[in-house]
Amino acid sequence: MKNWMKCSIAAALAAAALISGGCGGQSGDASGKIKIGVVQIVQHGSLDEANRGFVDALKERGYGPDKVEIEQENAQGDQSNLKTIVSRFKAEKPKLICAIATPAAQAAANEIKDIPIVGTAITDYTSAKLVQNDERPGGNVTGVSDFAAMDAQMELAAKLIPQAKHVGLIYCSSEVNSEVQANQMKDYCKKHDLAVEERTVNNVNDIQQVAESLIGKVDYIYVPTDNTLASSIPTLMKITDANKIPVIVGADIMAKDGALAALSVDYYRLGKQTGELAADILDGKVKPETSPIQHQKDYTIVINKQDAEILGLTIPEEIAKKANMV
Ligand code: TRP
Image (cartoon, rainbow, N blue to C red):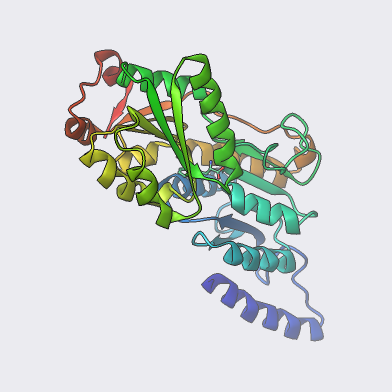
């Protein structure tokens, strides 16, 4: 929030300048820089990487610190923080807003209709009601999705745990991004004769109990890119490792945090793609309402070697060759 405190001082100065006839204009500050607001739901690897990529791409496109003031805001996983941040953006009128992860984009889109909002690391824009449809968003929101094809994710799991017949699924029931992934995962399992043991959590405090309820019932557990579970992979792994249950996750960072494997987008590259889109909007080349949602089609496989050892699993040669072993 420090930046905004600086801003209120700047606002006071600008007000003083107004009296003497000066005015910084709508989305520039007193120094004439363009203002961009970034709102991120929570601090964790994937989202931090997307954020970094966004800033780097803007810089490469001529929107570096000499021209742009980026207001970085993190809601620390708290909905009421999100509201506060978004209200501030509404009042400050930055030229563009970057929203990282679904809850951040929903909060921004609900409040702000007249500033371009570019989303990143968002699973499904249409289900989250951020756009009318992916091909023609129709409003002030567009962006880049991080949804990795579910078939490819499940096929990776099938190669790592070929004998699996029962699969666990854990996610937070209030996250639409997780619900979309869960539904696709269940569809895949239905088609491939896999029984699903589905468990939802309301918050991080439920994770332990939910994980314990799957012991002895499943051959592996799948966790989608869920913002509630994101920072709790180590909590989950304590239980699953002790019971030798492999965990397959939706994002590379979650495998780096201890899960067995992920097939996911590269979040830094995703952020760069988002920065490019933002630069196109700032340049006046495209408009959010007619800019289709973008996807990343080539995925990275991440395998956690140490976890494979704990589980006593041998990684098939074919996967080990193309995977990023961490
Ligand atoms: N895709 C999630 C969303 O739409 C955000 C996300 C990206 C995420 N990577 C993640 C969540 C990794 C948890 C872990 O909100």
